[in-house]
Length: 344
Image (cartoon, rainbow, N blue to C red):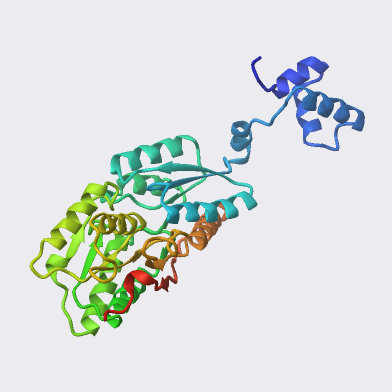
């Protein structure tokens, strides 16, 4: 049996009423008698009538939908961001459409096109690691599409942005390793073109500088796709372990790179932290029960999603154009656990 819904025109034909009368009855208009309203609503309920959202959006000038672009929803951080987005969007009567780039620029462009063809009212986006050209976003922004960036942002794009305090996160992680007695601190991170890489590296660099140390170029490794493939993290780790003066600690800068590095160190049967300390960015709730428990920088993903959605809705619902934009910087938290226990 096929499941299908009926239209206002179908109801009008069945009840021998005008389309206008049925429409007004469904909207509880004072112009229609209570008897006719009851008749129409009862028939609509019995025959699975549902309002057509596309037709409604054309009348209202809004689709009541928000597009979301992230790298991957399997990333715990982005899952938390999406939960935050949904909590605000649903409360405001908006639906969300989630797409993933898997760190591909081409897929990001396709996703943007797909979402805009769905007539979204606004876009929330965290850029892919491959994205350098923003023309696909700038052209839509010039046409009036509200866009808000979160996490990985374009700082020269005139709109709201919501980020974590990446500099402080990088500084605090590196400072903790230094305070725990580690001096040869490597850094495995994402591509140098994205905002979070630059900001976390700056924190790492500053912490070393404050300790009277310089960045060792051979200790900094970039993963072209943010650790999407285990091979790029493994290559980075192999290069570090092949150095004559091996690092005694590693600071990693994403969920994926962090957990993969922990896995690879354990696979090599390297004792953590005795042979190699590890601290990284991760929002996994399992950090306490990993082997060993993992020191980490935690980002407020849920709050980031909420704030980004609130700023996007401000633009969507504004009666006049908005020209004053802000970059909201949310605090990170450092959690120290067994993987960075002080050196003997």
